[in-house]
Image (tube, rainbow, N blue to C red; front, side):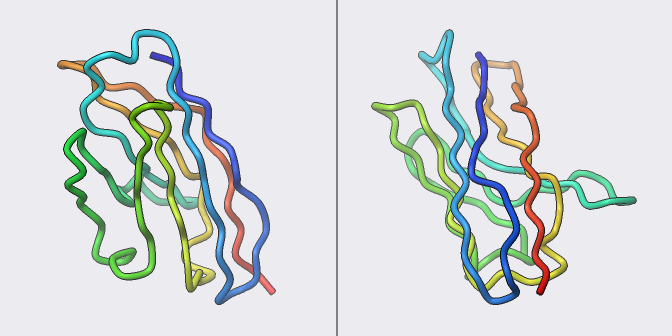
Length: 114
């Protein structure tokens, strides 16, 4: 499974941004898809994740502001980020789990700054 993330960039505090993660290769039986992030000097942390049935799980820091969704026909997951804060600045990594293996995309940088 290969994951291609896109959509990062610079946004002002309070703004919105949408990330996309397209899966290719052996995409059958992909279970969970979602996003993690890593800020400078910090560990990688969960942002939000969605399973094949549509159930979602979010970090407390993103709950209510971020929404993870997926289009199974396109093998693509999305992260809609609203009310962005400077502390959301990080490299965001696309994630997928297929059977017992985990896959990571290249990171995409999100910078929240005025």
